[in-house]
Length: 549
Ligand code: GLN
Image 1 (tube, rainbow, N blue to C red):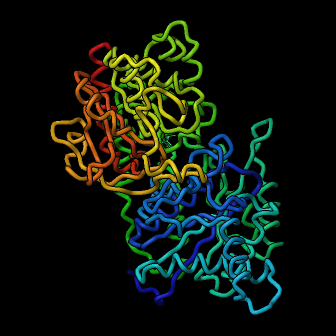
Image 2: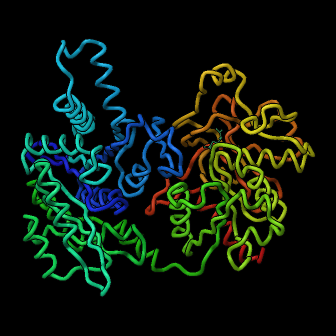
Image 3: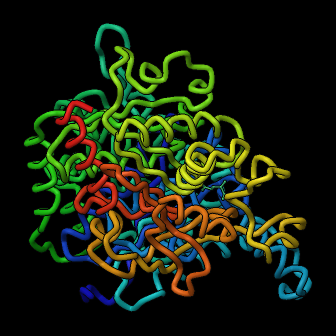
């Protein structure tokens, strides 16, 4: 730990003008920079929605659900934190309005407020502050907690979180708690960059009692000095603390370096009274070197049901990009709607991009609900018979098992009981002891667990380890009563739980790379450290494209 008055520091990242400005990337990039300066950083997301967690939210509404080691179903911004920083992430790092009210109402029912009237201030704000301090106090080594406040200043829902931030800044002092505010500098016709929305947004913050210390201005291009000075003048922010997050043509992972060039880390350290120390950003520079050195392209078809919304498979797309970097190639993702495959007249064309050239590899990600599942099985059959590399994740593995049963074992109506309750061959089903609890709403296998890998498998080759830990989020399982039929017909079981009770992975025999895993490796991939399974899959896809498959 760095001893700077042995005081814990807090940075509140808020946003204004409009949503989707990349607050998560900005907060994570700041985290990466402070880690580069040797600080122990912890990341927290405050979500103003009333859902207790993101587990019940549709991917269409809110993008993917990010799962932590301890099985929290969280906002996808935690995925950004995991990709940019090494902050441990758990239940504690994702705070929602639902959780805060739930905790306060519970205490009220238990009589712990001793008859007082329960109000937003101080009871709700106290609960928010307690949760933030808890993260800081998890370890004496924690130096800085970066708290991202979801929503946009001016929203009714985010007011209690901003009020909690105001109180903490007031209580701890400006050198222990900073406000970083993200705004938009839009371009209006005539290519003029406008600062007025930023002025209004800062005014909205000031009305809530928060004077931002740093502004991060999202802008199509770098702002000139005169514009930055003008923004500083109107907002009471120092000139040097007006940072421009201009649109990057490369990758979002360049953002930490763009901020570093504008001295964001130095400014934050100075404001917090932390002695400036050497910045080690070598991992980020070498990642950019790899990005610039990429040669050639690989085309991966992602076959899923939420294709219109990029955020629905965010960690999958990012992990593929990381694997492309690791393999030295550009990653082209072809988004294939599985429901459309079901009606496709020509599967070779449907499994391709607009020009109809088939993809080099197929990835079927996780999902819930029956729509498009038969299309996914068609994609698996296509990849298996054409010997195109295939990577099935969670539902994508279950689909592999179903397709094998239908087309290799000849059980035409084989299915998962998630989609066909009364199938004659329930090759994917609930565990026997789950069936009762399912009636009451169901249990989900969530979070980190151990798997044992079998020798001589693609999985073992990729991990080069015999025991792995990956995260789960599913209810249904490879059905054990079909284990012997599957194995006898050639399907390889490549990983199981330590007690051998559950199948964790299957592979196709006589195939360049056909692997399905019941867990979610995508949550652990980083741009600076691609996940070995994604790398192995992409490598196989590159080799397959060279063979002209
Ligand atoms: N719907 C499947 C299950 O519950 C798969 C879940 C997933 O892909 N995350 O088992």
